[in-house]
Length: 155
Picture 1 (cartoon, helix red, strand yellow):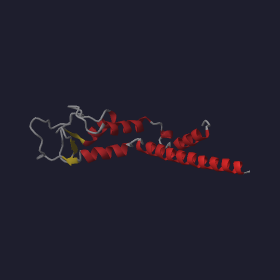
Picture 2 (cartoon, rainbow, N blue to C red):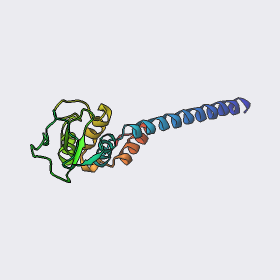
Picture 3 (cartoon, one colour):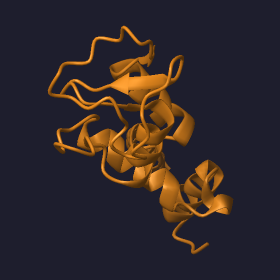
Picture 4 (cartoon, one colour):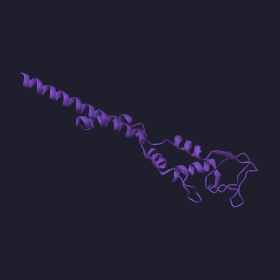
């Protein structure tokens, strides 16, 4: 009876260690899933706004002589009161024109191709754009997959 008791104690200890290590792995995996979460279009626009705030065009607007007074995306002249974005490279565009450009293409200036947002931000936004609508809230699917992997089953 005593050897059986020792064996059960060892098994119980090993089982606790196994469950603890699985729990730690689960926590690490969930954190990785959260970190790689795609960026929505709304979040993406907020990041653009944070790095390049909207400005309002006035006739006295300080555009350098070497820069045009028109939006090089839509080719329209800037009008009094229009919302503009001036990038770090000093190129200026209509806010809406530039925002559409930055969502459709890589986040670079339409003229000089200087980077506007970091590559990882653009990549995460592309992930969001490429997700099917049904999978955009796939947290439950990820957890089901994770738990089925522990059980050895298929979903």
